[in-house]
Length: 366
Image (cartoon, rainbow, N blue to C red; front, side):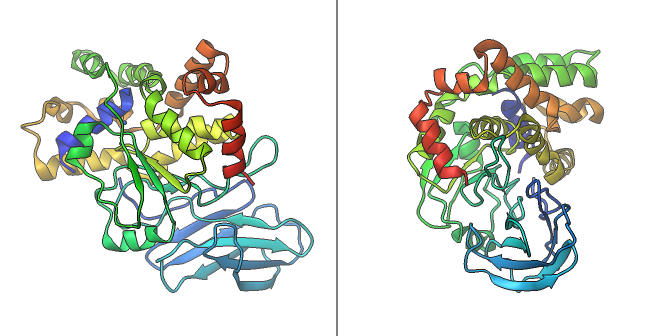
């Protein structure tokens, strides 16, 4: 990824959105956590609410855990490891206690070789006790780097629609060449008045500090939801119509995508603290600063209109590269201050009707 593309993506994503890592630790749900060591293809499954009874563990390629193979029986511990023969398909784990409710979990970040921040929004518990279904909705960053092996893996997901939130320039610079089955690829007109010039004027100030850069990010971030309304409207319409599985992405997979995920999870009834935690996971999965530094050193930046960024102290650049909870909290807080609630914003601006809310919940909750 050329530095110009990288910086432009970050600046535009931050005001209107953007690596790739192996699948690392995640909290799969409130009940079960799953980690994957991609190099050894070994999963570690842990359920903290251990009651002292025995458990059965199964693995399945079905999103609801059906038709699973038993990989542990009469297990007395609250953790288990299992090594897969290959990572060419999604693995879902069901943990069934001797007396109690079956738990279902999977890794959240997909174990891909390329791409950026491609992850499943399933497993989260709602305030009324439902859970977001696994394998129905995915969030991601740029997909240009997906490999043939990645597409083999993604073919098993059955994704029907991709909503690309990037600008026309971003899509041209890093095109999505989807090769995992037939999809409907949706893109949208560039938002008007992204305000990038105003944001960069802060960075040009001689006394710019990390605090002022962070504030500028938060100020710009609160505009993302409004500027992306046409894209979010189409995304919610498709979900209500049952066009799933659906994936949506920007460049980083943290800003425009992060706002979209926050709006969707809120509409599903996921608690605010979980919504914020999902947003912040991008910092767990992607080291954006390291990618920026590596890209700058590898490709040079003399021809970039944002070349001056590479001359700034890392502590000033760092707020641009973060998925700071303050950003998403500010965006959602501003929406609530203006509309009374996130749900009211979705109804009034994104045009999500009561019937569509019900349809989306029926599609995505169990």
